[in-house]
Amino acid sequence: MSFMEWWDGFWATYNTVIFSVGVNAMLALSIYVTLSCGLLSLANAAFMGIGAYTASLLTMQFELPFGLALAAGGALPALVALVIGIPTLRLSGVYLAMATLGFGEVVRVIVLNMEITGGPMGLNGVPPITEWWHIALLLGATIYLLARLRRSRIGRAFEAIKEDEVAARLMGVNVAGYKLLAFVIGAAIAGVAGGLNAHFTFTIGPNNYGFEPAVDILTMAVFGGTGNLIGPMIGSTILSLLPEVLRHFKDFRLAINGLILILVVLYLPKGIWDPRRIRAAFGRHSADKKVQ
Amino acid sequence: MMSLQFNRISKNFGGLQVLQGVQFEVPQGGIFGLIGPNGAGKTTVFNLITGLLRASSGSIVFNGEDIGNVAPHKITERGIARTFQNIRVFKEMTLLENVVVGMHEHLDYGFAGILLNLGGFRKAERQARERALELLSWVRLDHKAHMLADSLSYGEQRKLEFARALATNPKLLLLDEPVAGMNPSEKTELMAEIRNIKERGFSIFMIEHDMRFVMGLCDRVAVLNFGRIIAEGTPDEIKNNQEVIEAYLGKEEA
Image (cartoon, rainbow over all chains, first blue to last red):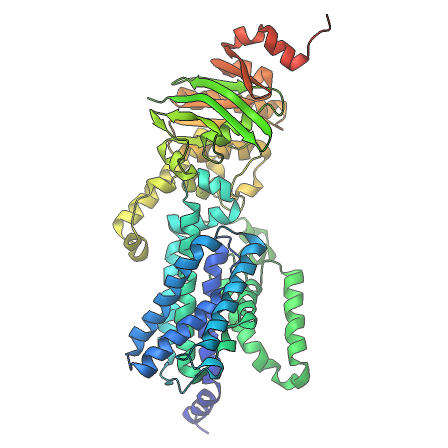
């Protein structure tokens, strides 16, 4: 068997898994943005759903080009985030988590009862037009955007708010404005990821974007570590591949998955990718290096 | 020029009257001190000036403008910065980053500059870092610029707070009990730092508990007791004021 044949077979079997790794990386980054601003928001699955339905309806019913559909799939969740963010972002901690979960439930029920979204049946026959390079390009763009923000006054404002809201405010940071910005950016990224995802899964339904995926997205980011951009991507990659790797354990698969999560949370509270701990583990020499 | 006036400010928390008709003026230049026993309402005064609280009545006028309803970050922009009684540095950031956060409003590059790493963005960021290093050198912390704020001692964190507050380019610097919890050598050092900041032309308004510290530093002092100003004057006048002595030491039975 030549390499090309092997590769074709591998790709045919695993392309959706590989696609999922990319989309999940975007989702983990979408919640990283709000977490980096100190917001525990669980609305990203709902934003993903809004993006998925928006993009799918545009390609299915209006036969819009994919790029345009994806742009709308990012824009509509961003707009929704802007509207619901103004009242809800006054909340913090678990109260914000509860309010955003409630918002997700509202979105699910609306989608469930609308005609155009196909109600409980969802949308069938979403054109499978997502190519690997669409995902690579948009994931790359997301990473670039967030990396640039981190190095600017915006990224510093997010971090300052996360560390001490009062101090940030009295250093001249418009706290409410930046929280809203983080919420909107996260929503747009999740929406685009939803649009990409819908166009390779063929079918989407209201339950794909409910409570469970909301928690999954958070888990991926926290598992990897939310102190930087690499952590969420490592977390999402591992958690996307783990079910495949554990395939041989059959019935124990979910239990092992859960066990690994518990161990990480217990022993690596800052996630798998914690540069300071890694540096420390490799000895004093590199630990003393100044961070720049 | 800088001027800050408190005009008959009252503040109630529910039925509790914390401030009653408080009136004073912080002079341009020099160090103005507000002293008073625990619970006199000193920190409330700062929270009102910085917009964290709203007065129940009266007005606060800064440079001719009533700032009673201005948002906290806008008050910072107008030129008032502060430190906190319980230190609030950004512990997970480096010293340099802490100070650069203070320059937030002065970095006026746009979104395109950030995304495309344009010249204007790079220049503004470089200048901000240079300025931050300079401010850190004012408080003799520049050699630790790239360490995390968490690794600093208590006294050093206070000095970092000074540098961060100065980064907002204030006309008036509010210091909330700067030596609370400090040991004697830290106190002496902070006293020198505050004098240095004053020499550089900043007006300072300080709340303090430590009488010796206040008397050694301030040009004018006001005394707050149970929500009222009971005396105002030079440190010498305050030291000999009968009412102040009674407020601090209690009244002798006749």
